Image (cartoon, rainbow, N blue to C red; front, side, top):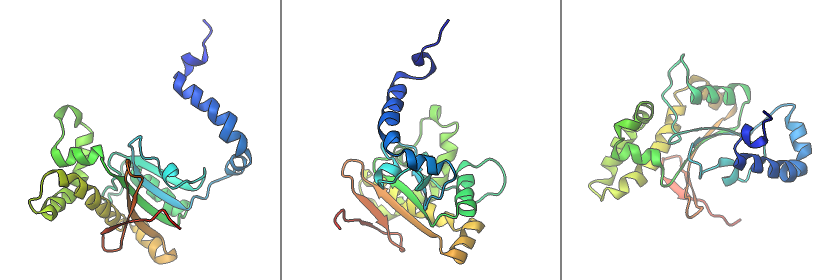
Length: 216
């Protein structure tokens, strides 16, 4: 039996690849040829797995500019040597090998992972997701206190921001991150993207957020 392309890969992805190959790759062939020899991204982005939030699109970056690791709710885990830790491994490689200039924890509004932490998870979906979101519990406690009895609808909004701040702070507990900050000025940042508005809120040093202007 002869296999067709549709048997090898989903039709949607096949069509997308053909568009990429005939349009973008054709235009940027020289860039891809250069990138085949190595990468020098300037920033590591720890982003959410949400399909609506693509760091390269939001920051209008070309291939090779960003080193990206994505997970549910854009969390940085606690420093825990050994074991299998995808985010920690990506962080280590970006900082120690690629020597990125900055790390950005990129969250977003209407985050499903944050909502699950705020309001509770169905046990049927918590074999892996539940333990992962436990990382956010201290942020949840802080968010609950900070809204001070305000309507529950505010909890997710506040938790999104507090969790980003706490993830940035946890980065400092990684010895190689602290060393990079000291030795060559590695910068740590937090941001939140508004899916509907397109607005980007950037975290100040004190943990508060300010909306960036889209005007020069």
